Image (cartoon, rainbow, N blue to C red):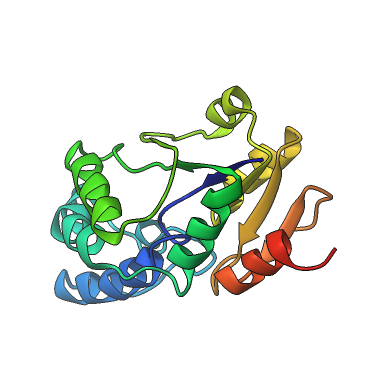
Length: 188
């Protein structure tokens, strides 16, 4: 089986770090707090200018990518999956800067996480998932999951506190790597 896996908010607990830093950043720039609470991406929850959004990422991106912890049991489950399946990381990382690619490769090597290949700068993951013939994609971003499942690719939707529920025959909602382990290795 071929399994695609997103990194931020799935393998790395970066989304919580982004949310926390966005509050600190907003206070420091004299912002007025969350204006769009239903937006999943931290930078869209506030009424920041394009310059402020750029500054936000310049201030926190490298630190978060280097230090955000692994999601609990992510390495264990990915390594178990890699024993029997092909693992592909499919990530948006690299869209903002090439240093994201370097930082990510170093971090994955440091954590010794097993995988077959990684695809960076994936603003739309559909083409890569189709080309690789991905059987399941694990992602936390609603728009990605919708696009993939609308095109017949099954997804494990890693739902966190800000993500809405989604209903679709190709979607299985999970909240942690224990549920992902049960999905792949539990009795069927």
